[in-house]
Image 1 (tube, rainbow, N blue to C red):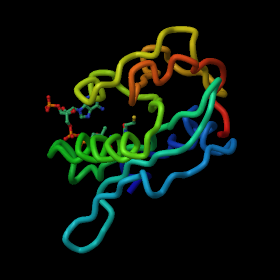
Image 2 (cartoon, helix red, strand yellow):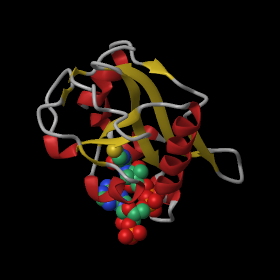
Image 3 (tube, protein in one colour):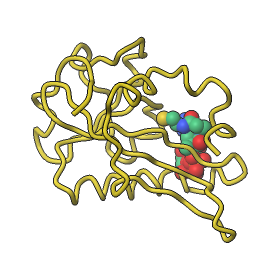
Image 4 (tube, rainbow, N blue to C red):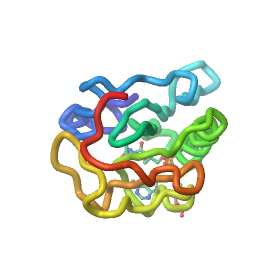
Length: 145
Ligand SMILES: CC(C)(COP(=O)(O)OP(=O)(O)OC[C@H]1O[C@@H](n2cnc3c(N)ncnc32)[C@H](O)[C@@H]1OP(=O)(O)O)[C@@H](O)C(=O)NCCC(=O)NCCS
């Protein structure tokens, strides 16, 4: 499903470097969408990371091309964010399109605050504080928790 949604370049993404360098998977906070045949048609994964302080890293987010534009992507993120908030997390960081994530409360991270182990367009580095000032100590390169 991830291959179908992202194409062959998905392992080249800088976000993948964060995940392979020791980010800790959080299955209980991640969300998967199944169709009537129990096939996976969507996924939103959450990882524990840190940079100056602990927070969550979101991705990959993907919906099967056959099931896109029906609200599934937004629902998966909304559910994962709710799980992170219920757990009492500081905030969530991701690399993605601001236009898609803005309705869920994400905004562009202040330039120069956070970096990834590789190139990333600063306009696509987004975050969401799960409580007021939750990410105020976030700085530096995102690494393992
Ligand atoms: C991005 C993705 C997960 C969205 O899933 P989806 O189920 O189609 O999304 P939704 O139906 O919930 O879309 C809700 C809104 O987001 C918009 N949207 C969808 N994909 C978008 C994108 N890549 N960029 C900006 N906006 C997007 C839709 O047009 C819709 O807006 P509208 O309600 O104003 O029409 C899906 O297109 C996908 O898997 N893409 C390939 C992988 C990818 O790029 N993942 C994101 C990496 S951060």
